[in-house]
Length: 364
Image (tube, rainbow, N blue to C red; front, side):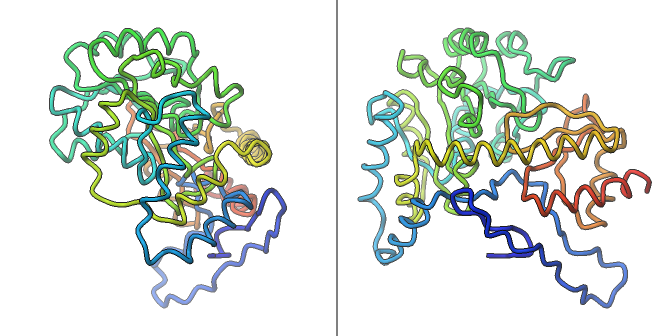
């Protein structure tokens, strides 16, 4: 593990080596410093549960062999926990794979309708495959504009929503989202990206999986990359109508890896672990809030592994300023948010670097 980037935590117990900063060896003074705080990504440095780590290590013994036999048990476990039939569960290599492939496939019949800003990576993938994107700006209070999305659903290839939204971190009212999904799904499949739903105040109420049980054309995407701390193992899944699961299977060209599948089965629904990782991430968010307040910056309270921050400065230029000081953040394409950056929860050590650098960057 790169100890210059992460303090390792297992099951909430910090091993936490001090953040070591590699000595600068470049001769060219113009070369920017190495990134010391990776806040542009939304990984979970809490890391996998002890059970997941143990299962992944044991699975290495069988890595000469393909992992087909590990897929049915994981599908069965997901189906049982979420109250759906196994044929409504489709595995993928991180939810990004399913989001990208399905949105590109659905876009063959019409544009992808989506809010802006949102997690655009899968949609931009679809655009590179020829999809047309129909962006709907969020409202003045940064909420996804469900009525505006609904108005564009007719004739769309699909409608995409991320809940909580990325980068705003805001959760939608679950009743309003259900009403929207039921109506929109009559015109086009609705993809609901729930990458961070497990750390919401009430995951069952906020999830749209019940609409899949009820037969609506809704595709719910989940991942083990975020809350379960397994970004490097690439495991995700969708819950959708059987025909949508079949479509996904027909589009995926690769096999899943044994360590990831074994780890996912070992940790899925682990209540003790989820309590620990949720508390850890909430602590990281609170630290970001405090840093923002100390520097007079506005921010949105988040339910994800990131915080959306208004720096008051043009975001692309400010991103470069921070990078020159060793801090990486992410910006999103949104005409309504020209001064906002997304700050990932990262590790406490990296957030300490952010706290040190931010005042200097604001004065630069």
